[in-house]
Image 1 (cartoon, rainbow, N blue to C red):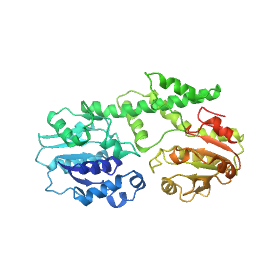
Image 2: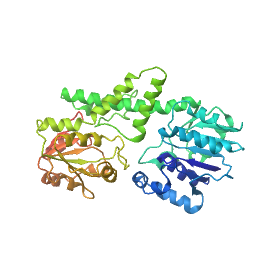
Image 3: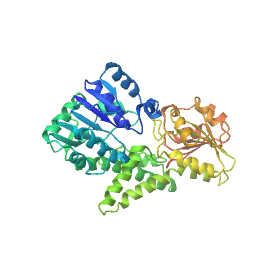
Image 4: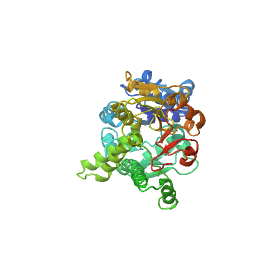
Length: 426
């Protein structure tokens, strides 16, 4: 098929690379605000495992062409829109100007997170009876984008047109061989389902964070509670890990988008508002533990932070807990030394001239030299099994504040440290 991918999001880059890898002729047109010249060296693209290599392979084979504008004589079969939520007007302008001028049948794939009902509005901008818009919500996971696209657990396909459904099945046939991955539903249902999934996941996380606080006050190890809850088949173990808050460009935006959808219908979402409030509060939980340990005497101290990205496998720090944590520490006169395998460049862009911040590249133990505490914020695999003897020698105060509960409290304490996790302590 002849496919045009429009957008500068991770979803657009992944779709362009994956579709051309299975034989489709793909033209990728990034959004004008983020052209390929600025995208090709972006931290999030470079750090995404294998993705840039796949893009380069597609270009070399001739199956992928990067364009600034769609050629006027290109009659595409599919126009795949993967734009950011704030580019809705740009999506409408694009559809009206490009596929809207085409006189042959085509399918618009709305792979963006727009308000519920937007796919129908995009279809209304098309001028041919054989031109249809379908919703195929973005389910890409940062850090494993290629795998989640090429080996999907399931696709939410919002389509009410049999021919358009067949076209999408053919487009993605190469990724639908192991088992049936399409869940067919009306377009509005697909758009709302994508938001509802992330709303439920965020609610589970925030509920566990609330329980962790309660467990802490009752002197109960929340790990027992998590294991007991997860063993109940009605609940399961997924997204039951308490921590120091979630972030990311997609997860946070989807929650706010779902709240906006409810607000626009006259329904106030007290639950979602509370979920978001809990999450923002949890971003300061490691700071509060530090404050309590030193009884508020923080001025002049040094804190090491391992991990700045909002999750392992990405270089992004959008809405990341580390941003809130840094501001709280600096306000108390704390000097911070941060290590992260991928996100230091992004942190440097946000805080280019912060005298209380030192970015430690390479050796993550260097961040702990002379530190009064070590805060684990992002659970990169390189942090899971540190040299505890070396760590003890490097730090002024043997205090471990584990924001992801990746360490065993008893073992860490046996190595001479004071351990405080999220609902766990030793």
